[in-house]
Image (cartoon, rainbow, N blue to C red; front, side):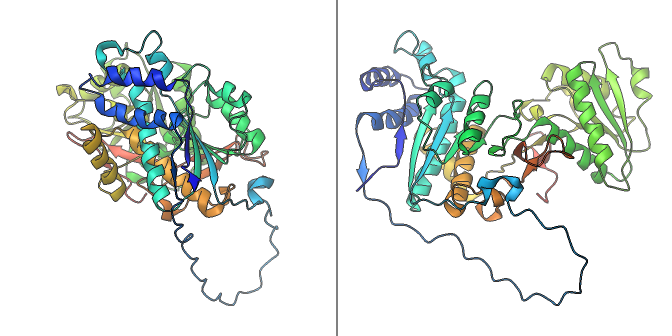
Length: 465
């Protein structure tokens, strides 16, 4: 008999949770969510045993390679590095019968119950829900993998709980035997977790934070939610190749932050090897910018590609209102930042504007995995899952598949189409100094979808991904 492979760690006692559940049952809105938490904390009170599920067959067999054709003699080439990415650990093959996985999710349980076991307003605070849904997606993936015979010991940490923060967990040596860490973490948790992962040579998946957090020299860090620099590089590439004849403008405000975004766009332009690329002009925007100053940059005989660097909704809409006044005279295609995915542009003045944004995720929710998650939430919670639930499922499924196929150091082949859930990942090494650095600063998902906003739904434009 094997102990069930999910070990959950929290700072609450079982009696506390029983009292909490009594109060939460009264909540009509979130009563279903408590069932998931009940399952989590019940494992702390009692051991659950079950026979180990029968193992399924291993990874798909490798296809036989075709017989090579005769090659003409070639000039001697520089020998390739024997160690992948110059990281000695990546050359090791470490496989286990059971893998240890740690999951970090921002559940905020201590904050919710800071003064009593009563829920304010008898509903779970909204800031708790993303972490809970991420965890629920993780759990659904673990359940599915277990049915396939995958053997795991999983620890789940509420990284927003007092006494359970990342430095404390590391100090208490609770992660020392871990083979993989998956975290919905941001600042300030990412840096100490990354430092630990680098020291112990454990792969750390940053599942939701679109930033490197100032981290460098850690090839064990895998950033799934692409950085802003990767987004603007992808937008620049798309507008250059997606429009035959165009006038490209980068419209930014006067802040140093937006100046750096514009700088990344121009740097991507300089690096681009494309003989039909069009030059990029920069427009520095302010509330005092006049129509005459704006229209001097616009052309009536070709598409005007306006890349707006504003990440905030108020700033983005302020610029759009001014542009919208000229949409009948000048053909406009407006590209925004990844934060635009949650913005609503329903105001009458924006009608007729063609708007785009970038995202590392695109899910039309028609695949078998998405239907399974949606049906589960509908049956159990009487609601629809948020993107956090889908991300929790996908990150867990994808990386544990890599773990069980290639072992602890699966970094030689991070992009396996056969493991795809609903996102096509493209993890690439990032070198902060491409001329001098021999070891990647980290690996990042460079796959960026360009999405057009629609009245009722958004549409993926680069369909080749």
